[in-house]
Length: 340
Image 1 (cartoon, rainbow, N blue to C red):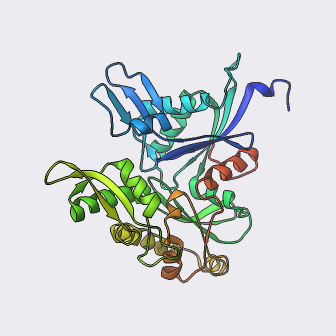
Image 2: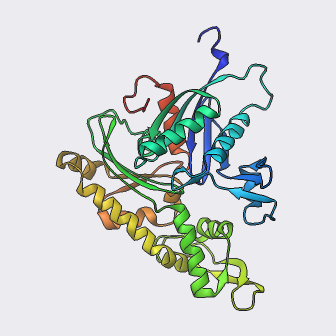
């Protein structure tokens, strides 16, 4: 620790499509939805995170809510920069006299383009970061799960987030083969909204779809310990009057079936591209799953049935990626896979 080390702050950031998590001093200090509420006329930020999420879908013409990230990448540069800056401010309860310079490791999807990568880096630099390194999400997930990524052993990691599902085969501190598809939590929400509209003639919003997914979402029609039916409120498409219906987990499994099949196909595709020696390792180690989407009831079982491989769910799937990013931050100059 140098004399002026207090002027440098090290933070690990999981900048997700749905949620942003920040770790500082080994603690998760920020865990907020990735959303910003703005005043339309002036562009002034009214709220971010949980407060902005409460406004989502309920705003009048003077306020708009923006999700700055879509499909794992920055869709609105200014909103993303403002959101990162405000979330960094949340770390300190008291305002420091001298704002510290930031050293940051931030995770990005593995299928990202150079332009999208540049946008993430620029947003962080504009928000006050002096030193920014990037790490691919499946790599961060593997480290967070507790896999020794530098070993000459093959491991396959599936990270299902809000915007993208990443499947990567990792060995010797690098990604050997990967598949990144833009089907994940947001697409599941969209499927639920569509199903409600077609099957029940009822319109629901994004937040209601998210609640249905979390409460009764399932990947299979037969699961252990099924959740009770959920009462859902929305607008009747025929009469325009609000009404209530009851939905079961089996209905939601039916609604999500097509999207989950695409994730299964991507997993099989990643396994097909795996070199034979690493495939032999994967047969022994199985598949590791992380990310919020992996919490969908029965998804691990469904992937195990499809691949005939053991599937291990991370201990804390939502935080595995940010914890891995935090470990990478501590080994800033040692890990070869941190993108400078």
